Length: 387
Image (cartoon, rainbow, N blue to C red):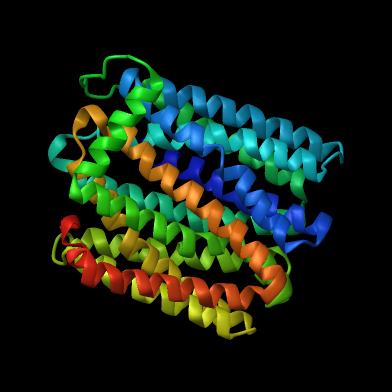
């Protein structure tokens, strides 16, 4: 129940991440403002993710998550109200996206830390692989539903569905009883965040994992935030076509995540990361090289496959090697790295796209991922700290 409700809530997040950029682009026609929308939604994680991690280590992870979900649902309800009254504007969208981004980052930090507390210790590794399937399933379902709803019924209906989708997880959390675990002693937020950062940097497996997360989010995941511009300017499709583009990532990611669970530990994490980074770059090259929608779907699907190889390996390594007392804070650093780097990559990509065109940006980002894979192979002991 918790897994399915969590996947539904995550789908709502992906719905919103597609809906807001589409509406911003419809209002302004600006690729740069698509990047600004991504930044508005993701930069609050600079505060929300570490706070969520500290609160998850200090207090009940379950209650932190329930409160974050309630705030998210309330804010998306306000967005629905504006849309229903045809009062949407760029400031409204950016302002509410910022507030929702804060609540969402707290939510994600608490949820990722909670998974290890609701399964037996011997099942932590498969639990996070299963969690990856749910996350990537939501990447497939959320954008597809958002594109379909936006094209057929408009933004008000999309935001209403988004609001309702968070409620099942909140209800499930009321009834679950996590294993009791030791909690950190409350001192002050900044010192607790710094302590978590020191643990992450001093332990090689965590340090390599976080650096890899930042690189894959900056140059890989950020392209999804620019998909609204690609769909309009390169592939010339409507919002439902955009939903299919983004969902191609999720569908391929779900299939790959299932395969990683089935294959278990037959392949070392370092091998999966090296292969994943190269394949990620090749997928982006395909997207950059074509204006044909079908080939765009293929390129995006390849990036979904590669994303799972890299990020499931990284997430599993973090959760296996982090000390229990620091789980919330280190998890929050990982999530903050993903969210902020994705926003930074989208903002820079949007600005460069205005000057050089989005296909050029996509090709440059693909090159960056392949070069990082080569650098990690030669200068980071082939990512073996993740094994």
